[in-house]
Length: 223
Image (cartoon, rainbow, N blue to C red; front, side, top):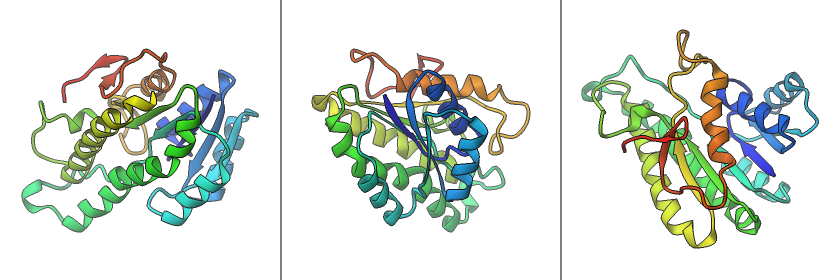
């Protein structure tokens, strides 16, 4: 299996790369700078890890990735920014919201579109969108408007892609890693290994696995 993980130089992304590479898969570890990608790959120290510069807000980077990757089975849209705990929807800085959407929504959207030709050639294609329970409309309240709204939109995109790609055999799911102790999540969350397990589960689903779902720890979450 060949996978690509965005935002993979730290946290859940890096642990996902490590887990997949440990299982013998080839994994493109991407980051916004070539130095960050190379440093993270060196820290993991597994031969199957291939560092790659990829800023998901850069159309040029996305086009270069699509040109330079020969084959792909799994795309993991993990890169995300702006857990804006300081904001409320009623007073939010919409420039902050737009910036978050560029990475959290439009980035996965552009990248998935660009890599679809490769995924359609795969025998076991998967797309995993790393979302958050903060995006669940069933339990949504106030706060973190840029993050929550952009992730809710990512969930909607997951449903649309899943429906449109079902005939191609491409499984598309959203996963919530839970509150994980990372630079974004802060201290006190679950270990990064537990958060990454949800991502790895969705990336390695059997061909008859679910598509168009929202999961944490392999169990459905309400939209």
